[in-house]
Amino acid sequence: MDLRHFRYFVAVAETLHFGRAAQQLHIAQPALSIQIKDLEEALGGKLFHRTSRKVELTAGGKLFYQEAKAALKAYEQAIKVGQSALKGELGVLRVGYSASVAYAGILGRIMHSFRQIRPEIKFELQEQDPYRLMEGVQNQAFDF
Image (tube, rainbow, N blue to C red):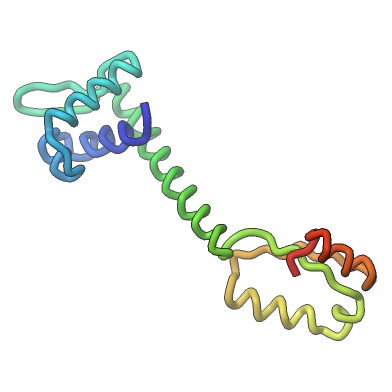
């Protein structure tokens, strides 16, 4: 069982029609039917009541629909977060600074400007003496 099965199931559950769901998914209807049957076998029961005239969710199908839909949403969110993090749009920026920079207000202005551009970035601030700052930069303890 994989996400493809979840997508296929959700499409059928939302349309309550195998033909329309297959069109939306750009696959052949017999292939979709086989995938749904495989999913039902993996889960150990029927997700749909099927007649020649209509398709409806079983009680278990209704519960599974809610979970499958949530799983797909979480999957899509994970992809968005991963993409944003890899682009540097999310995450934590580890900043080492000296007291003189903080007292002069420079750090506050820089952080304010940065937050205007990347509001999702969190700051992890660590005050250090100049020697420890250089050491932290060399050891990659700080990003900036």
